[in-house]
Length: 229
Image 1: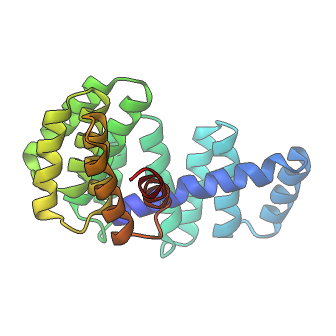
Image 2: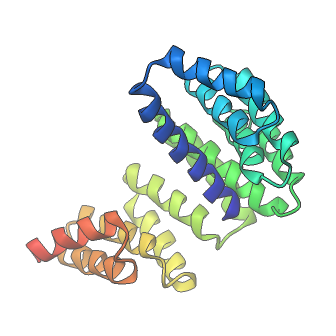
């Protein structure tokens, strides 16, 4: 869970910087950053900012070097460490990312391995390679049969492939072990909705909202359920 949160935070921050960076003069921003780095060459924050800009400009080698320098400058700041792993993972170097995460004492080998595999499956889905993604998750689920994140990803792919009966078996198994997962109720709602059992779907989405009213997807689906039920 910790690795997943850091990866999500990295990409969220990248989107934020990209938006802010796009509203400013690129060259002026870079010159200001370089000037500041000359005065404070060991500033972890400035090095991380440089890393993000390089990442957004697809200069991945320079981005990795900047984040690595930031981590060396301030080892207790784990953000730079996870940024390196996130970039390696984004570039498809899953084994390198996994090996790097294994060196972090706060991350268990299982946690790092699972997250890297989940990201690999997600990348395959983005490329519309659902069958290959499902294969990755199949092997992963054999090692960790009741892991919530694995089960949710597995179930979502089965739904996309139209294998609704199989998806329902996975979702019901997850419900037995993770009865408070609003995400699982959302997926079960989609399964029943596609099966034509809309009343059942609306009930499940309302349950998801009750479990996690702050989740935007739950809120939207609950509103839909309220409107049509």
